[in-house]
Image (cartoon, rainbow, N blue to C red; front, side):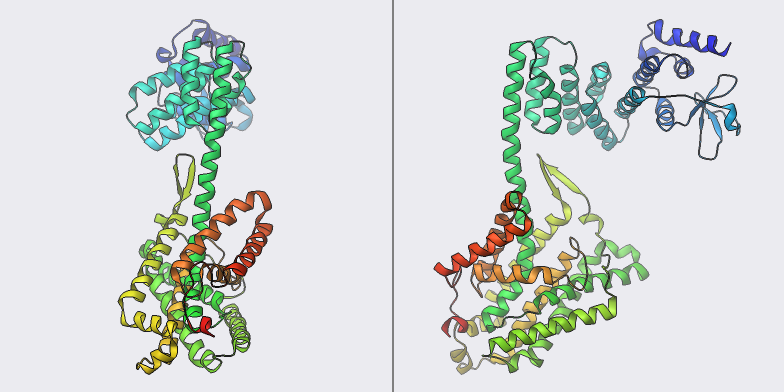
Length: 530
């Protein structure tokens, strides 16, 4: 008897030829358990085209195997606790025993139909973000049966981004239909303009079409997309290179100042970067415990803290060790290397050897697309931060008395001392400034790298390469060197790999300094005069 009832409902919903938009929702839901899998997939499509807001819950339950049938034929949605509610009107049906319920079975074809149907229903959601996601799903599915639903969504859509994506989804569906050649050619043109992998997936099956005009149009479109993707790939590598260059700039610019003015090879520079990262971690821990509402401001608060902490340690290193070793570069190198080991062990003792979590504020989380370029907010803000630090440093060197004294000591230490400049004080402030900038680099690196006692070791060699390549003591050379090496590294990586790419860059720098020992932008300083 139950079978006859379901069969009658199937005939009512399917064979009767009722239009999906006018189909009775209750009849469609009751028809779901009966018939074959193909019949069930057709009912799913009709539910989607009905536009009834209740259909989304029914389809989600069907996808999750939570759509069941009671002994009296009522279709219910069963939650995690076993409570059942009527799928049509939400009436509470209690908690029936599991052996009293029949599952509405699905196969892969029905699941595909459900996913598409959920996407079509979401096209009418008030939230533009959900409509955009649904439009992407419609583009991926490219289901000719959904053309009418996409057309109705297009007519009602007001958001330009969603509307453009819906038009592309419609074009992909048209290519799978028996639409006239003129419509298919227009669809090919539209998808060719999109120029990404989704467009290729929609166009590729028609490359061998029987209609020579369509086949030729598809081949031309695929060739155009390949060229477009190649250009966007170059742009993506440039962006990755600029992103890496901004990190190298932050890590190296402080070292460039120290090395240029004082001629000191500071092997503890990486550990000063590490102190900046741990300062950021400490600030975030305090904020989490005492003022969680300020978390989005944590990096703004951490930046001056990291600058002061790393700068103070830098001044202590210069006053306590480095000033006694001027003119003895080997001893200075060994002494600062020993300081680096001490700082690493001190951090291990205080914070432990494990990686520490530094969270991303909301404004540094996520990503956005520019054409086919994927840009993460944290990398973009680090690039802006690096350029801002560079601009402030340039202003300090050019517009302040201490900057003037630093430049004087760089050009001629003896004459600067004879003019009354306290070169020892300048050395300490220079070392502190370089160390403070290294601390700022640690703030930025805490957003993209593991905060651990070994953090600085990964950047010390690259920092020295940037300084040598750009010209010791010239911050413009450091800027040019950082971005040049960053971009070069990202273009070499796809062909040579990360390790071999760095080796090739190192070999290139060695060959370069054979021709230009002073780097890209030579500065006259005491290390050069010596």
